[in-house]
Image (cartoon, rainbow, N blue to C red; front, side, top):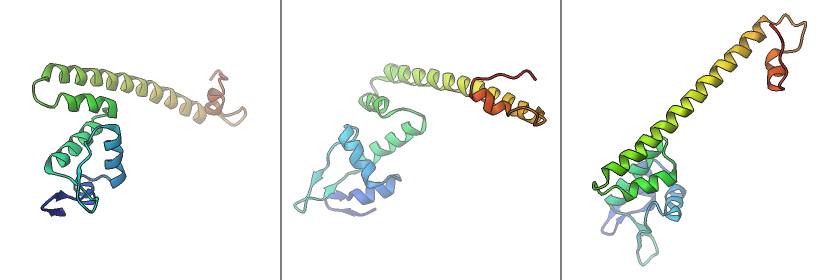
Length: 139
């Protein structure tokens, strides 16, 4: 990392965390990351705390948290709000389970449509296309 007496450059932070520079600026505009101090040359300089915060954001995104949810988690990141953090985690888990249930229904419907296509002898229109149009054929 490019560290000087004033801290890390935005490029070095981006590389260390695995994001691009514009992502860091976007997080600053969203209030997820504070504006760093600027040198006389107007360069932004970041510290280890900024790198840790960005890694926290990326980890939370990897678990499916939205940026708004991450903002809430960041406010609870002092170790004193475990109950509230757990509630946010439980809510996210419920959301994930709901999405998984929906994906399983979609998977089942698609599998059935594909099976119907395999049974079609070409004497009628494609059951998959018809199903997407809202038309139903008896097998």
